[in-house]
Image 1 (cartoon, chains in turn yellow, green):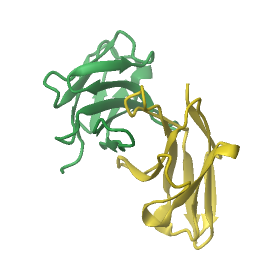
Image 2: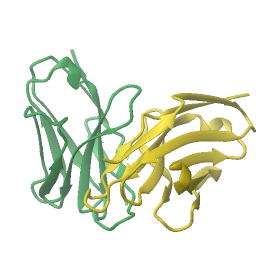
Image 3: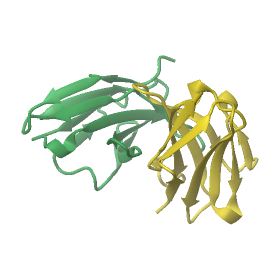
Length: 115
Length: 114
């Protein structure tokens, strides 16, 4: 079965600092990987996805992630944090084909942005 | 595109009661998913439908849980004889059935079992 591991349940950065949220995956087939963000009292929103095209994926709100097969990683970065980035971030792997686009999520990383 | 809507937003019930949640997916999406999320955890897959067919159920879905999507449009998730451990956010998502398609999530139904 495929899985993802998010290192660090809480990350705190200063406004303007680099954001780095870590995700490692386990998969027996080439994976599809996703980052979702969840703001309080809102549904999950897709930030970006990797689907075997370019290894560096750009998403919304200035976020990007790089797929590194040798490290089985898909870390999320943003060069300069903004207060509005404070939210919970989830890495997920898709089990397609065969799983119907079903996603398996990590446990999440709560990002705090301080002045 | 009105998004995925879920009803109710919050449900408080007493242990042993039955509850039913509704999900209306994005209209052109033929895949519909149910997830459960507890505090401090990522969403956990419960079940998914391709049109009206329920194609997969997680072992998390005990026999007290049942989901339907009778006409391939909206779906309901029923929990019978609720237990305190059922307290969680129940999320619905929908997608097209092509590879790489992202899931669109609703805001969820927060269930509290007293």
